[in-house]
Each structure stands twice: as C-alpha cells, then as structure tokens.
Image 1 (tube, rainbow, N blue to C red):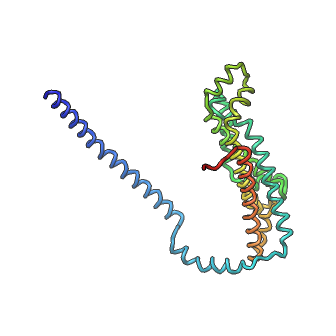
Image 2 (tube, rainbow, N blue to C red):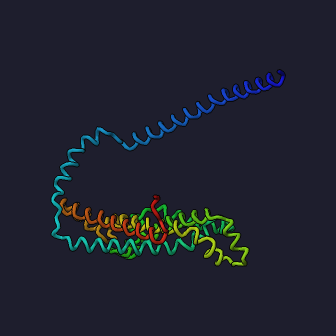
Image 3 (spheres, rainbow, N blue to C red):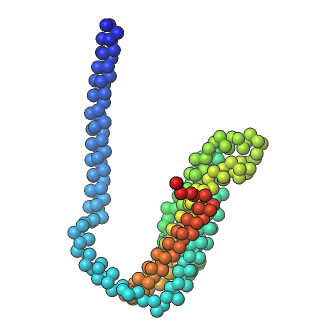
Length: 280
C-alpha cells in the first residue's frame, strides 16, 4: 500500500509540473504570434501593399495585356539571335563562376580548412560577390569594358562565384566524415582525399546547383540588357519604351520557351548524371 501511495504522489507531482510548464509554452507561442503579426504589419504598411490599389490598377493591366495581342513576329529573327546571345552569356558566365567557386569553396569549408583567417577571408569574398546584384555588377563592368554582352558575362560570373561558392562550401561541410577517414587510412594525400572522398559525395549537389544557376543566369542576363549589357533584354526595354506591346509579347514568349528548354535540358542531365529515378 505504501508503494502505491508513493507512486500516486509521484504521478501527481509529475502532473502538476506538466501543468506548470504549459502556461510558459502557451505565453511563448502567443508572443511569437504577436511578433509575426507586428513584422508583417510593419512590412505591409511600409510597402503600401493594398488590395484596393491592386483592384484600381487591374483594368489598366487588362488593357495592357489586350494591346499585346497578337504578337508581332516581324522582327522574330533579330529577337531569336538576341535570345541566343543571352543564352551564350548565361553559359559562359555560369561556367566562369563555377570554375572560380569550385577550388575556393574547399577553402571556405570548416571541415577542410582549419585556418580561420583563410576561411573567413574566402567567405567574405563570396559574401561580397553574392551581395552585389547582377545589375549593379553589370553597371560596374559596362563602365569598365564598354557596352555589349561581355560585361554581362563578367557580371554573371561575379555573382555566381559568390552564390555557388557558398552552396559548394556548405555541401562540402555535410559530407560523411567516416568516408574521409577511410580514404585517409589508405595513405591518401589531401588531393586524393578530395577527389576520392569528397567529390563523389557532393557531385550530385554540385551539378544541381550549376544547372539551377544556368537557368537563373538566363533570366538575369535578360535584365542586364537594361544597363547595356547585351542580350534580348536590350530588345525588350527598347520595345517597351517605344510602346510596341506586341513585340514585347513576342520577346516574352521567346524568353519563356528558352527557360523551358533549359529546364528540360537540366532534367535530362540530372536523370543521366545524377541518376534521378521515379518512385514506383
């Protein structure tokens, strides 16, 4: 009987402790909810986000879309050539960025680079490259090397170096340390450890990141035309300034089709290189 009473008292104490803990978590949840509401209210009011204003502008949007039809294909050949130029910018810019980011990413991975000065220096370089938008890089390089697609390539490469450098280094930090230890136990040097122990583990992620930024850079390259960095973006902004809405629609269709083609190409590469298979 004494044991039963003792057990009952213990259970009551545990139950009371749980009851004491509940209000604390409840208040914490309320505070977090209020904080989220305050942040969104601050953001919405600061950006003048209003369904009323959207509703007022909706008829103008409909009118703008109506005036885009039918698409004007009289300059289709020129637009296609500029789209190809934009794709070339994306390919070269992505490749340059990946080639620069790949070796530097090993110096920015904590599990590979024990020297904190080198680690933080490379991470700062990545942050700087990634922190400056492609358009800003485009303005900088246009002022340095002039108008045309080449400053666009440099702008894309600079930004991609920072973006891929971060993703590559974080992927390297997630590798299985047991695999690395097993390779080291065979007497491999640092280069062999990277080639045999690390790259096979991160290769699928690296390929996915590069393919994603190839598509992203095509979209970014179209915007670089706004600052004179070549590509179909220059044709788009020219048509918009001259109120040639039907040409604008033609250019937008070409851009969407190009992005779809890049996406299908990326899916093919992932299927054959990364070995992505559907679940049955």
